[in-house]
Image (cartoon, rainbow, N blue to C red; front, top):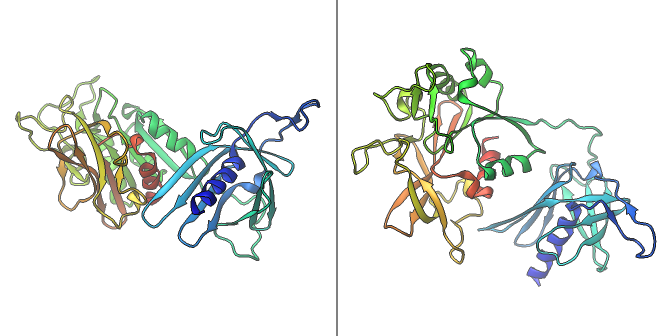
Length: 368
């Protein structure tokens, strides 16, 4: 029964979001034209059950996310939606054999949805309101500003794009900054340094110092793999050869530390990446980044084929999750965190964050 209700809710939600350009009201009649998205749907809606909570998020641009939150797990589905009059049109959803239409009604802070083939409606309450609250019209959304230095993976882009209702982001190359970079970084709520798929893992002295100052002043940073382990000397792509690792560029700010591997080479150096078949296991059971994820992928799914590094946690860093290889008897740090006094925070991913979209999304929400 519980499973049926959850599926029904997901269908409802999913439909609230998946769009099409037209639907046939009468097979022999003219098609009904869709009027895109009702802006009143924009926001987060909650349906509380006895032992789980359903959450729906609409961005007002045709994108949605629905999550079912259990005590120890979290199921997330993303998709698209369109509305027409009092109907929500659902299409292109992988769990649906056919398109679905449903009626919906918004009354102040309550959203009631009724599938056309069902008689019992489901009601959701808008997050952050009470039964007598009325959302002010044209309320401005305080979008978080995110800067990606480097090249985000496809999976990272998908997560950032799906969070467009909460943030805006731009991508820049590490070589594009001038000596005023410190002031530029202060404009951003989150900075992501990801050169993991780039051949150049270097930052200039001024960029390294600016990132360190940004974190020291309370900035939030996400560091991916071996990004920023080299120092550029400013002449083309020339980098220093006497210092490899994060400490030369960022001091003691970063959660990860580069160590010598079995061949005597720095473990974070380009070319020392490790191809691993394995899973990511939660270590810190109280940390919100791993909310709903005990192990990824689940044990009944094939393990990830991922690239990682044999780094270790720096002094003062906390291990949030670890990688357990299945092709070799090895473990590696997966996600590390180091908080910098008073408010700065750095999260380190020792793999492509796009592999675990829910975890990456939780990280953005945690830092935001």
